[in-house]
Length: 97
Image (tube, rainbow, N blue to C red; front, side, top):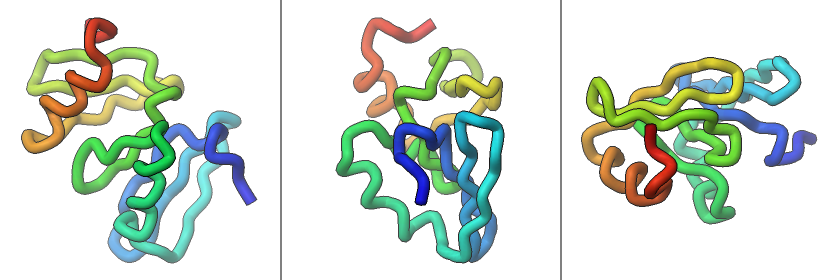
């Protein structure tokens, strides 16, 4: 079992999902990313594009450059999809760099 607070982001990989944790560990789960969409209803997760669900509490930077992306606490840059871009900017409001 993993605490949701320990999750930085989830990444789709075909019929698997990679879960990246704050301690640097990576778990691979034999479920599609779509099966984790329910995390968004917990309030701290956001489906930023087709391949990633991010923990908004693990975002260290948000940028509007290059179409919009976030930088996670582990340094990973994740682009926002065209469809999710405005929703992301609205969510973070004045915390965009």
